[in-house]
Length: 93
Image 1 (tube, rainbow, N blue to C red):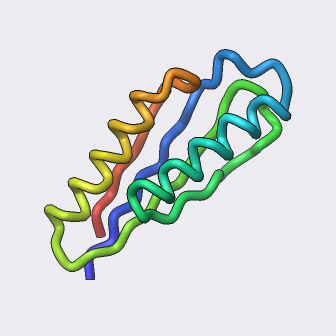
Image 2 (image 1 turned 45 degrees about the vertical axis):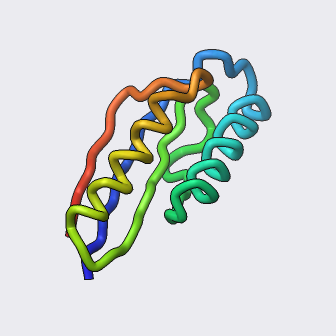
């Protein structure tokens, strides 16, 4: 069993309230879950208006497959105009 995990730190520049931030994060989380069949959760402090941290995990039997899924997740996050990636950390276990 191969486990892939990525932690993504996001900047949400258009967010002027926690409500706006929640809308962007919730939409992004649902999109990633539905499109890539991965586990996604917001991690860390959700009280900062313009920042968010997402944790994404997937499980498979092949390291290359797990790596491809996480790469596609990162590409989808990069392509979302509502948020930009500040930093990320990927790990394959």
